[in-house]
Image (cartoon, rainbow, N blue to C red; front, side, top):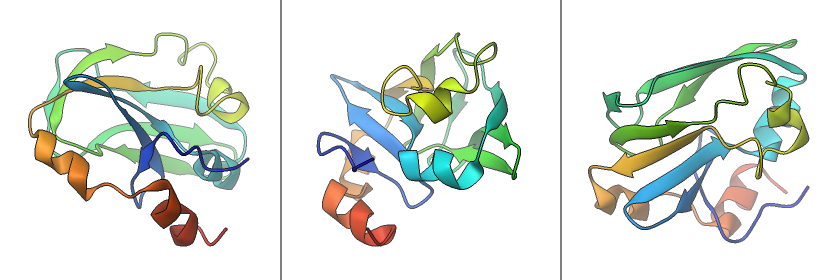
Length: 126
């Protein structure tokens, strides 16, 4: 799968879709491929505030367990409620139904620190 051009990325393989005052966050196709079959997702609840770089959940897969890191500072506004019962959605549709969080930004300037699609492709050596 190619790297979607309408998203921004982190070195930890999260994608970010910038919306008005919020961002939608998920893991990249590269990340789900490296993890293998995802069997469980542990996520924070709506209303939790955190700082950029903080662990905001874990993803358990057959190959490994990985932390999910906050790509920006903010407050969780929405959690994908389909993931606890269908964690494999992260494998099947990481850029669509596999979104993880909607976050209200507390420092919009942090968006400028995220990678462009071209930079992310270089980061994963496509």
